[in-house]
Image (cartoon, rainbow, N blue to C red; front, side, top):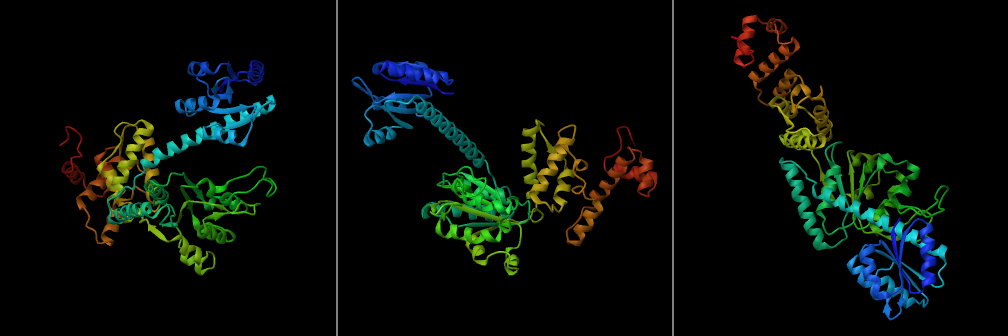
Length: 462
């Protein structure tokens, strides 16, 4: 409930309004003389004003201007016995949220207070959300030094620079790449780069919306448009107005919705279900898919004209297995974030773990890497992740890795392979050199020679 300052020179009316709002649970203070208003305002620090236009020789609207200059977040309801369009417009221009005429119906006043406060609360929450989102977007990074990632960063930079000079009308952008390659992160990155667009980033996964609700989710609906439509709903396009709408898994967009999306992109308008008029929209639409849309077009499951409308600008994210040592840059970044998230000071990777990460094929791409490291971080007792702490698919057999490297024409480190096998045999036998030698089908002395060669003998061993 807001603290309310009632500024009214009719004492009886002020008390009646005060009693009604106090009974409704509000904290209320009254002031009857215009010259005392600012002093009372500063001592009481109200969140809402109920302000008469005429306070003896002082203008209530001038007081409103002074108060809003000092405290812009204060809500105001202006009350006057001299209601006119001109006065109402002037009051709204000075920051009033509502305008009531005398005689004031106390029930109407209570409803107005609740309406203004609810709208103010919703607006503050939206501002907090946008502020938090803006901070999150400022931290978005497209990490990697491989040529294809560098090229994408440069392309985003050129797009952002040209978008500013071209104005607000942005073409659609299509992101392609395997699952887990970071298409959502790239969409965030593009939105954050378009600094002239001040609206929100709104995301919708097309594969997660039931077909019968899809049109309402995208375009919104009017109250009474269908059974269950008990209130107006703006839809994703309207919610993202002035910002970015990200449609992930665009290949799963129902066939019936594809021409409507195409029309929205071409006309920059949408029509809510149950309405007969179009509404203008100003968005940057980014779509993403991990599927081959051209094959879907050949199968008659995706409109060719929509596809070409979506890919005016396109980016293809490479799979992690083709990004070389980017996997290690990403691993270090994730370790840093996990250390902060779980309070693991100095979380790091051993050389063996780093090599395992580099050798793994990462069918789940960046998302798989992130989850693998999070699982390892939560399973270790200290702050160092070894290759044995990684999930089994990542911890590929050293012989398999070596064979894969040979098949790819990549040199292998034979001594590192030998060391890895000896370490695994010792781990499996609890450090018993003789048992480990039997596992490796070599003699005990040959085993001790290799342990000495690789520095694996226990302290005091020969």
